[in-house]
Length: 388
Image (cartoon, rainbow, N blue to C red):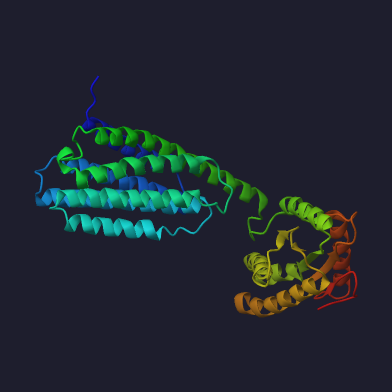
């Protein structure tokens, strides 16, 4: 059975088009990573449609130059968008500057040198191979988020594309007589067409796996956070806090828990409305994170009760945190809501190897209750009657 290169490339382009339509259809509402992946596939599909279309017009004409140049722009920019998606799925900022610059330079050089066949083939395929190499190297870097094996599937796919693309570039630039066009029945063209069909499927599977993994992470985040404030909910906080307490006991490090609630929250709701009350809670969590000089474990513990766990912190550090938070709220409340905001709090420290999260919370809750009974707008700890 004989299969020509043109048929394989047409099949690959149809696969890309199907992939583009399928990703748009099955993903529904998506975030930035999935949207960039969708755009990347659409651009690459459009690029290949234009490249195949250029084979239907007279070689060397203005329409051939236009279609071919737009095709290169679509393929290269599609890869740059895909690189941004992969960065986001790995937990990094979507930069992809180098692949983006390569896409621009390659397209411009291709258009300028279009009349020189050996140059344009070597230039385009060489820079595309470099682009593929950069994206593969980015995927090989340690991800910020825990990710599955989909990234290695993509790395293999990119490396295969890199090898066959680079070989086409070398043949076109140095052995032009054997490689007159991309439909020529040369083994390199046949290998490229076969590899393209396989890697399209591999990329589709990897993208869907990455999207599913991200969706699972988002569901986990929603299950562990408070919908109004974005702080951890009580169940998730207690699970993480238990692990942190065990670690602090093993390493003999200090640890503090501060439990507090906004003062006179019911009056804020009754006087200014529930919307203002919700914003007050959001502002409190914003302040808890804004004044922190290290990563704290922040939680909405109950209706208007919040708590923060500070690792490696003794009373001096938690007292300084309390002072910064009070000052921040004192300034932000009237400015943002037109309402003065204060809170009452209790602080418990890790005492001995038998101490637990629950016992610390009980002591902090008792101190919080005392602070409220003594007139509110104060913080009590286990070594001093009152701070703040």
